[in-house]
Length: 366
Image (cartoon, rainbow, N blue to C red):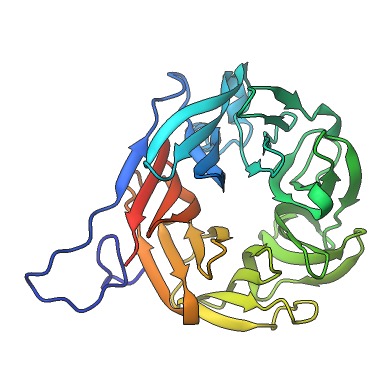
């Protein structure tokens, strides 16, 4: 991050010395779900003015036990989905999934059918109906499910990062009641396992996009790649440059790809009338010319009005508007271990889940 940037907002017009600065960001934290574990707000999804998000103690337990990824299983805690009212900017009562469970909730999907689907990685995924309180478990799909996306014809796509069956991941497609439609196992390059991370569905070209962690079987460094499949699970494209951090498609088929080339973080925008996207298709909007090692883009979301919000772990939030104008907010990190995940644009503001306790941070746009 450039040292010349102001503490929380990086794009400001020239102002007179006596001008009033924009209001500061507002942090809204929910009551601690547990006294034994420190839960935080993870990946989110919005519907009807409510931001839903996973609540998990994964990161705090991971750090507190020598970077042990299974440490979250040591203590049972509440399993629930957080809710935030975007208009009033206040926490709502969470959706309870279980009073006690080994693992919290990770990613969530606000499905058009009214249900909120969630993953839990170490345990089965599931869903909850906010209107009725009904809860369903997707036990038949197995463990290791990571991130979710709305798929073709109302189905749901998930990445299986890994599982008790295989160190390699997979793409999983299932129907709204949890029936398995298809599973497409991944294969890593020689010497690596392929662990599937983020996923999205291209509704125009009917393609599935994912990115991966390539986990070494030996002492080689971790690598990353991106893959494109047709709707029947046939791999069409695989590449590792530029590095694809996150991707999504609007309902009109416009593709948004947050990628890093060298030290440059950029948003590649692919219009719906182009043929199958490739790593060089579309136009590029530079977001950060000096992207630091250790940061990561965790979400890219369009608002359906020509604006896109790109959320980074570090709290750097890029809003790309009409004519590719970029506004960058730098949100506060009172806990330097805290990580930002999902940003949602609403009424001239952006609200972002902050994984440092169960917290959502809202800030005005310019």
